[in-house]
Length: 172
Ligand code: FES
Image (cartoon, rainbow, N blue to C red; front, side):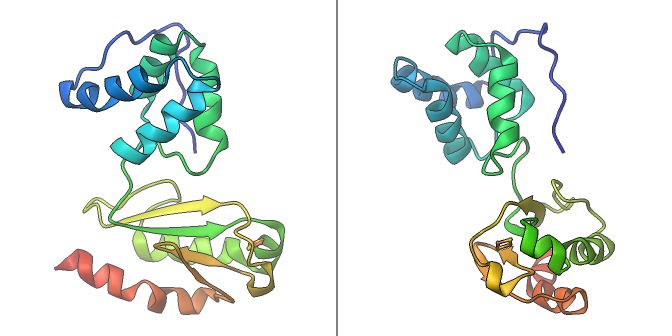
């Protein structure tokens, strides 16, 4: 799910000075490069951990590009998140082979046992659910990626067992 951004509400500064301390050097180092928008957003995702609507507006202002351009990049690439990710990330592949192979049923199971939708993080910050495009393991469809480790041929009834250790950790 993507956040709606007001194009007219230009953000000329960031409320959190710590965020500014992290983002301003990234802008200064990259804003003259060709394709600066992508480079800057990548660096912010890597350094800050997310690119919130407020950050998107600030980057657009500083780079002199429309907010819609920045928002378009952040929405298009699943690498970007608009909120901080949890300690653990579970991604559900929605490429064709996985979709046909049963990813929607696995997502339903995941929603039931975690109480959150894809794109969200549990209240304790332990787990984020996401969807992603094909990860190149179609022969093992349906695929779930848990903390960057591919799990193949996942069945909905096997899913709780796959994330049990992550859930236990969240309760500690
Ligand atoms: S479609 Fe899921 S790994 Fe290719």
